[in-house]
Image (cartoon, rainbow, N blue to C red; front, side, top):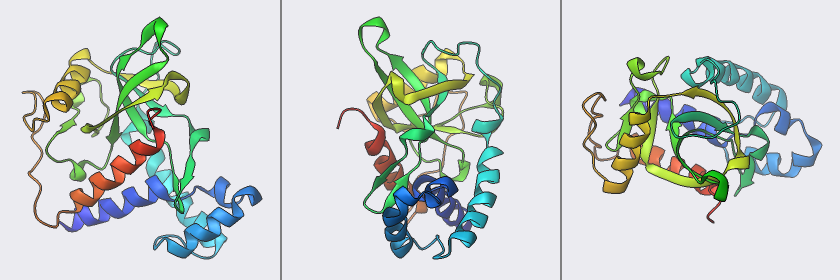
Length: 220
């Protein structure tokens, strides 16, 4: 439980705290001050905040999403690509700065639509729960990562950065099927996450992840 609480604290920081270049930008000063007033993780002193963010940035850069090798299809959006939502699309909402997540592409509109169906992902593996598909090493993932089949939404193709990895097609199929059926049953190749418990930190985590998805979906 303690590790989940620590993972939830980290998730709140890298999902909703402004990175150093936003903190240092005079154009964001008012929003940053509002954030510092309500965020339990951010210091009132920019120098301390930048130091802490430097440590957090190094942690994120060493996460599975950052370690994945480049994809061969740099422009064409196809199912089962891991792509970041573009970093310049970070957005303030109610005092928090929502940093763009890494998503798994599930379905592209092709030539006739610029809409792409995606599932949000997370590398804090201890926060995986029912309905999460833990991506196995043997299917193209360099380290632990899970896709949130309960957090599927639509984005514009222009929101997406270049792919960092292409995964096996059955992964997108499994995530889509789990999302449609709202089933907690995992495919045979995936690890079954533990059930949610009363007062489980993963409940708060899912609320957080849903808010992040709500910021970036184009169907608002």
